[in-house]
Length: 338
Image 1: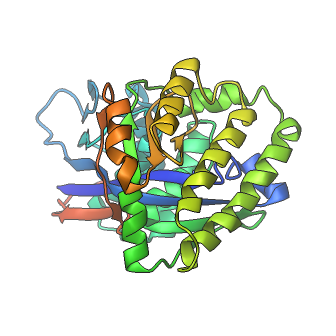
Image 2: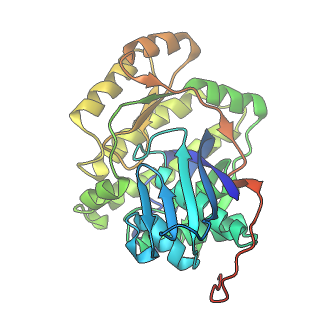
């Protein structure tokens, strides 16, 4: 039996510049962090006395005799990619899916980590991120960028740079007390709306890259400014919050499905209550709102958001990990793991 734990992520700046059709020509960068809310993937080989060969438990239960019959595209393609046979897989999470926190990519990374471990094969974080990107963007043909898979695999508070050569993960070095102040200033609320980020990405692609390029170029430049604020101990950390507000307004110009009138109303309530800035996490359309709020205004923001669920959180640094490792002997001479 293998159990993996993989964190969810929140992205602050640069979202959209991690799309391959943008960064291959223009370069891109994001600032994001993982935090202490996780998904868990439990995988073991299925005993051979059942009349099915694979059992999957996530938001529904599947029992199939062939991987071709699996309805969940990520699981089906991951099993075929790594030639997984006769398994029982269970997925659990601290937060709901389709909520803007990269949950699908965290699941992809955690599942691949579990599959490799079940085969007794160690895979480093870069290979897990690369495989998860290939799984979601190529095999499953899901629209979206690369940042979610990388963040889930590596963990931590990072600047991730994108270029024609691929990507590099650069940890942002922040003084511990300053990092704590940043964490304490961020407040997250669940809007109750959920959606598939790939659907939002596809809808937003009605706007061509050329039309969005001026906004994406400016969002890329904001990454540099935000990083300087974070790393300069003399800079006013409140500027991070004000930049979030500016960046969110820019992002709303990158597609008509990024926000909704209901989301706009909630966001404006938070700002009027004292938040310096914030954003909707993920591709847009629903999920979690995050605000940067000075301590003296946090109670007022909670009151303004009283109809929403408040989610306390703390930054984490571990990325995906194997929590429990007890591999089982399985004879499958045809299996080849790349």
